[in-house]
Length: 265
Image (tube, rainbow, N blue to C red; front, side):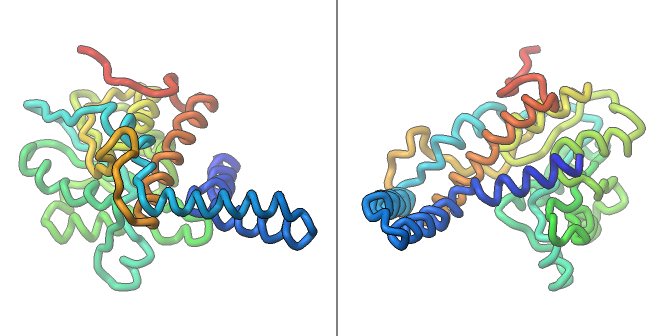
């Protein structure tokens, strides 16, 4: 698992859509320097068009919309438990400022008090450690513990703080619970991440009801103007990373469907 984790981080460092303009710029300048003027001009021209397109349009919506609409939110009449996947916490910043800090996926945490009030008898489990290769000591589970303590839910939440990715979320949580629990459980994670998460837990023998949060997409074709280079590149990165993750997890046997779908009762 260590090699899978480390290789995934290394691959994504080079494949991120917001890093691509840097690689293109460097390659284009190198081509000009060694005398490949035509190639350098083409690469630099493509780099400029790439940045212009993402500056004006949310092209990532075309990647995100199929992911975010795959599973509708479910609110069963009764649930035995609520499982929250980490990823919305800023662990190092939280430790530095001594208060919980969240990122763009912070809804994973922020909506739990509402669900806890709706299902007062449900067990709550949070699973999330560190996805960082360089700073693994800062863990999302510690941020979650502080947050839940602050909103009065600390005694009700089981924290699993060793997972580094979604596969480990599933395996470690099942181990912490002493096996796959019975009854209906809600799975709370970002909408774009829900298909892969559902597929992984199903593969472990744990069917879950989806409660997606943290939506981004507004248009399926990416054709609307919405200037904002950083936001548009971020959305494209999120979408591309998730599609790559779906493929990798399928071909490595961590899910049994390339694009997991809802199960009809």
